[in-house]
Length: 186
View 1 (cartoon, helix red, strand yellow):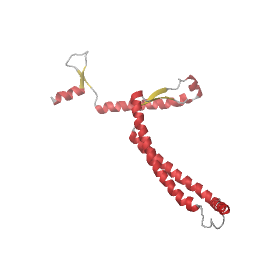
View 2 (view 1 turned 120 degrees about the vertical axis):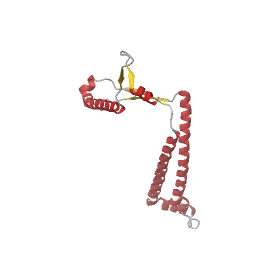
View 3 (view 1 turned 60 degrees about the horizontal axis):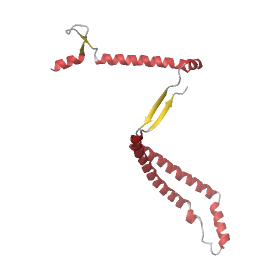
View 4 (view 1 turned 180 degrees about the vertical axis):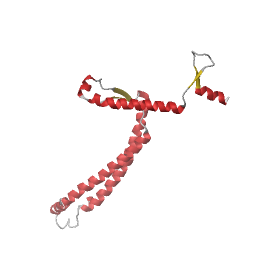
């Protein structure tokens, strides 16, 4: 029985001839080699035809740009979670660096000394001798608070993006998803 099943796979009957005559199919390796050769020839023909179509004369006589209508029916929540996590970490780093830069510029510009001098002038020197604005909104406190907010943002943005992916998948199952039309450039 094993020999017959092997024989059925390698031969096929030709209806015009008698039942005894059969034609043997080429081996799998030969069929694969033939298809690869045809694909390579087609690829080369397309490659050679591409520069001719790119010329202005070819564009005038050429065809209209191809269009493809696609529908986005599912978004993978796991990939959305990974991507949003990395992007929210980048956003957190940018936030911390920008706050550090702003606070450094304010310190170099002498804003804190100016605020201390203004408070001392308003309250009086005896009452405000111990006042220093940097004890309340100094660089270390502000950066610590900014890092805390950035860490919370990472968690919240990742969760919201993942939840949005789940909600999109449910709505796309009901409504069919977002339809996009893509076109080739000329």
